Length: 427
Image 1: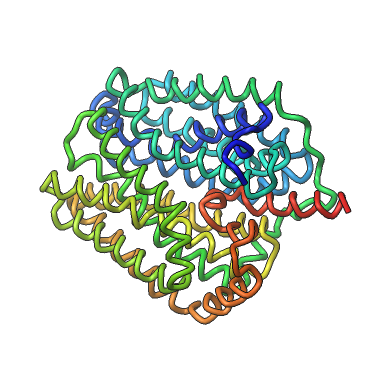
Image 2: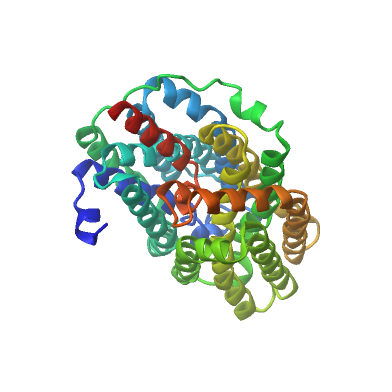
């Protein structure tokens, strides 16, 4: 596919892609303003960490229901509902005068984000020209730009006021909402609605549960770092923004390029063992040298490399081993792993309150290493799945990228199924 063909897309595609950029900015947007929130609102770091907890726990629970909702009201309606919730709750967070209020509004933001990310890629596939592969590339580009830009935008706006990042997201999402309503064509409802309890029942399968627990433990370390690394750096909002901007660039780049190369070269399981272990070592170093600013900064930026690889490969592994439909597997996996991300900042805050800033990072490193141990119990299934994928798609078909970065937040399985259904109808 030529670059000219790839980027000659309907306006509807760019409207949703823009919304994707803003949505994924939310991952690192608040990192640069965490110390400022603690200072301005007279809140402890453990109270501020609840911004991650409320957001991610609501996202986790919502992952169980987004497929059920989207299959009944259609992808566009679900997308618009999610965008509207983000606009409202991001603005309310900016208007709030207390840390408890912001924490509560971040929960509503998490619900909107879950509805949006579950359907955004499916809508892009439905509207894009150039087929599924082109839609994947566009989605990955939007995701990578959002992850990298989030901390930088948060730092720039946060340097003016801690309210700036919240209002910025609300305004940008409002623009995306209007563009989506006007430009995106209605999408059909699913012919076979997703059962409400399907994701919970899917966790009875050992291979899927193994990957979910591995991701939960990895996310424990990942969100401990995001939630608490800004404090020992003792930097301004804009300086923190640049640190996490560098981290986000590495994460996005290695998600798209490094992870697929490692998977092809060494296989999914060995690549994950190495990446997860390296990530655990970096978190351990942050814990041991939390009082050395340059060491914390260097480890955080370097962690973007292995975080990108881990994010992609753990999600890909789920799609390889899950014995259920892709959307159901993605919802079940998202539910389990985001629980780890939600609980980790809360637990880290309690550890800091009772001991010191070193402890949560040491526990986070131990959690990631425990994740490696859990992953080894599924080694044979991953090796079999790798062999099957190589035999079926020796040159890397569009379906072979289903678990790469485009699926990191749950959208690719639904999009793949939509594409296949469209092809069957066309025949």
